[in-house]
Image (tube, rainbow, N blue to C red; front, side, top):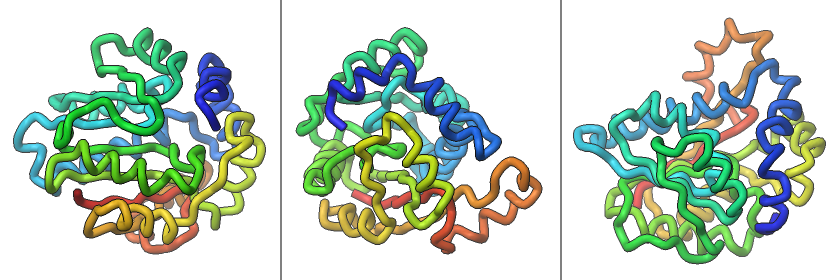
Length: 232
């Protein structure tokens, strides 16, 4: 999906997303919050939480993650980047004091080397051509400090409900889902180390009582989503 396509869907992104995932029984906020819980857990384990940290949201769109980031990491600074100028304007209007919103040309991030302690991307790379994955991940690594962490979340193509949701979604029309082994390989080829995969979201809301089990199921490649986390 190119910049004009992102701009075209920016105004209706939230409503389209909510409608598209209705079968899960959850609202978009549920998915945004669990990602921020995962990110906060990674920050704590890395020891970075001992001081104010700088976090990059790569492909932030209209800022869906911002309020949950503020809840989970209230003392951290957040910079949201995206190629869609319309999405950034909407994000600024929604959260004018909670994050910095910065335009990105799709190739080079407008930040100096080592500007951030942590970076995350929430279901962004399936919109990006496979040939660009490694260069963009290397660019994320460039703006992380040595030892900084990255978390890249994606939809799991092995999950049939995920595939169905993506197939029905208007703004996923040109999306190409990425298997976890392929994304992990791209992360490693971009120069990151200690890359690990964890699968997430195994139970819909109707089976929410089983969700405490998810902590022990991260190895099972059938969750609706997954993340690859690694070190710069």
